[in-house]
Length: 235
Ligand SMILES: C[S@@+](CC[C@H](N)C(=O)[O-])C[C@H]1O[C@@H](n2cnc3c(N)ncnc32)[C@H](O)[C@@H]1O
Image (cartoon, rainbow, N blue to C red; front, side, top):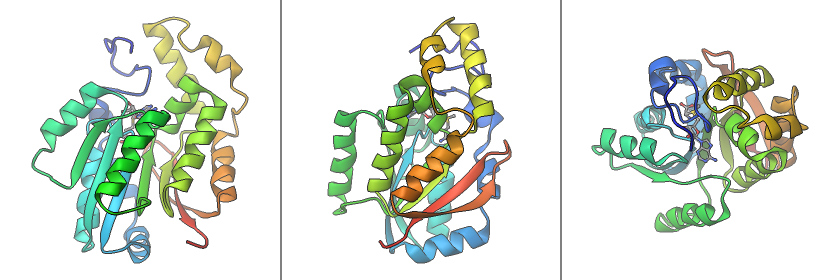
């Protein structure tokens, strides 16, 4: 992992001060009461959630609080590739037993076994709800097209309800430019090999749709990113 000496640049989007420049409230206000009411109807009383790329846990905590306000009992597995951020999350939210934080790479098959173990602990085969906010770009530029698509398919296979905020292509150029300042060439090969480019949000939507989901845009976040709720057609 590269040094995080420059704020605003990090190889995996593992910004140490992320919630200072993109507070959790930005996404929470983008999600309407109508969204939560509709989602709530599709969820059981005991909700098992996965939050992919939780950073230091602020958004995971806000999502958990919101579900609890709808009368749900929830447990969350919040994962992030960066162990420093996970340690910080554990320290920040030790008072909230519903949140479990783990250092895991969502693309890694061995780490996916740990995700399955978490489900088993709660007597579930699938997550009732998966959140994946602002993480697809980092998976894509670090691991390439196939891993991005396989990860989306994996998430679709693990739930009937997916809430996803994919980054559009314009964010890629900005991200790569910033990381180049830290460590020249780190993305040069990988980035030039990507075949999925300006249509990345559509491609992600298509994969989710082909996996049997209906997609609805439920909000646009402060950074003008679409938030999509994806509901399995025949759960
Ligand atoms: C831009 S932050 C978004 C944080 C949070 N989801 C939000 O929107 O508020 C992206 C997060 O994804 C994490 N991440 C990137 N690649 C990952 C991977 N392969 N597996 C798990 N986490 C990953 C990063 O460490 C970072 O904390």
